Length: 551
Image (cartoon, rainbow, N blue to C red; front, top):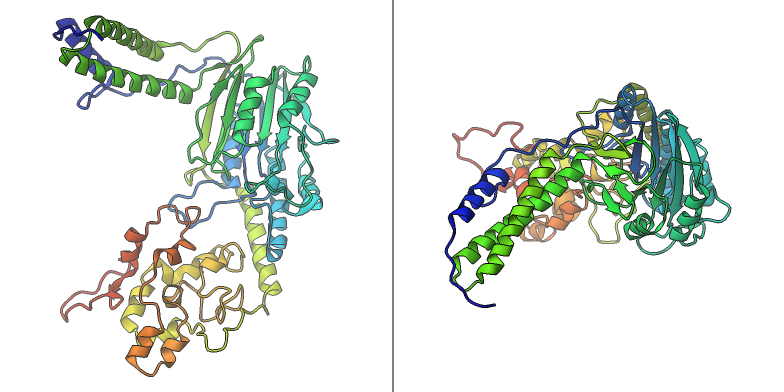
């Protein structure tokens, strides 16, 4: 590039000041938050609610700091919103009734009962259609049919021979064409036993959409397929308005993505979020995206480009080797982008044509629980608890191998380690089992293992047979203690116990799903105290408060 000396011009300096004031360019610049996108003033023709990969969840694990989800909270939100949006549909895509494509034999009854409890709740919410996922075949073809019979909504699978692939629902005078496609291969690539063979989902979607021509005003594809396939359907299948995709793993759903003439939507899995899209159906042609999330994402992208270009321009202005004409061209480009950015805040929402506004409702603990649905969920957990109490009453853990230690329980530890016991009692570990009893889950196979000691370990505990080993006791971290107790010398006692628990011991239960804020370095000190990983205080030191060890 030819070298020409340049000096920063007054006009450019003023432009930079203006950019800082308007768009927050530079480290020290501040600007108020942009106004929200103008709302569509007319009432929506219809609202479409959607769930993605519900995974059979009735409610979230209560061990999280801020547990999201709960079908009873979803019910509250939908029923509360129906007053303002009476013309609505609920659809679902991805694993609906089961989370895992295979189940251990002991889990079958509990998981089947959960699916049978979920069905009537989805009926209450007026589920219109769903595209199943691979885990819906966790109990084979017969199990799939049993779960499907709990709802009247059709399971749409256009890419399985002989299955219903599309349906039309009329809501508020709008004919909504629904198409479903599925891929029953798991993340490992295998299909669950009993899952049918599928054909090309893109070709099947194309044929099913074509069959709706003239019969539907809006066409929605429920895509229980990998995201890349869902994007292909959106971009290559003519006549599709929306593709609702499953298998979205992020904690925050991305904004609507326009691909060709269609828009790709998704929701947070396991009922942690409920997607909704308001459709303003006026005439023909593609839908215009008036969603706040899309406008915010567009503003953010343009802001970043403006910051980047302004920073480079500032450097080029100071560099005498940079060509003046090239800098002038980039300055003009910056002015054009600045005008585009300002226009985003002024852009009105179209009042004619086909428009949609998509949003995601977070199903947070602040959303009240629908009492009738909450009662149904409670009935399921109480029934399962009682059934498991009887069913597994005689089940015992495997015996320890000859010469191997067994679990002795915290009472035996307390005899020599009274100070450590006192510290333990003040931690959540010391009353972990009570939290399950309070929720009628102390015999629930999905919960009990992380609230007792030595669960299903040789010489340990079981679902019901866990007297003396309830709560997260010393031996969860330090290992079974019978050999430690029987040791004849201090050296032998030290050699027969694990003095400190490595992170992987904690990670067995403190998973992201069950303990979302867990960090070994942060949490480990919270279970320590005088006589338990810390020196004993002097005679005049005050005892720590009883809640000192709680997170």
